[in-house]
Length: 182
Ligand SMILES: [Zn+2]
Ligand SMILES: [Zn+2]
Ligand SMILES: [Zn+2]
Figure 1 (cartoon, protein in one colour):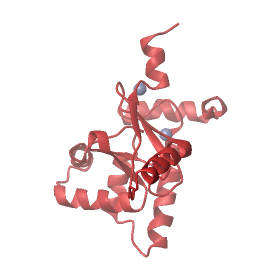
Figure 2: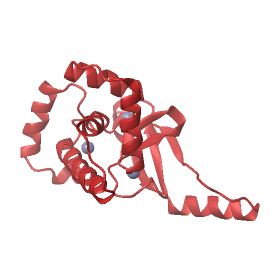
Figure 3: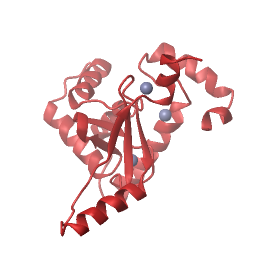
Figure 4: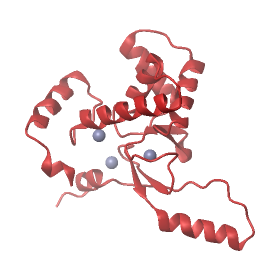
């Protein structure tokens, strides 16, 4: 996995991240995940003649601060804790909506929460979200076969399918090791 190819520099930034932000994901060089996502955000908004406004960017940065799913009110809380500024919930919802439309953030339907998309695709197409019950981390994995089955089952029933989401919950690889070290 990418972890083994991590440059030594990353270990230094992980230590710094621990001091700066206790919520940061320290299992890998997450700064590069965030940087890639912000680049994608600028390109995606540009392409649609829209702007990555300061609020949209801050909301995206909060959601992308880790690979965890978080509710809209968590986003609002973190935003006001960090900036000391009060933002109206409706403004945060609108920013999240814009990020959803742009495919930069996805809604976790089973938990009414949001997570940053680190897979370069639009609208979660044919991916499945795996959510950890212990640490709330979300991983998107390709699941084309699964969606083919859903399409076939819908067709077989004369059902015109508009959307389908696949989400699984359980324990991520890191939490499994922590629960059962061996
Ligand atoms: Zn990351
Ligand atoms: Zn995605
Ligand atoms: Zn976990």
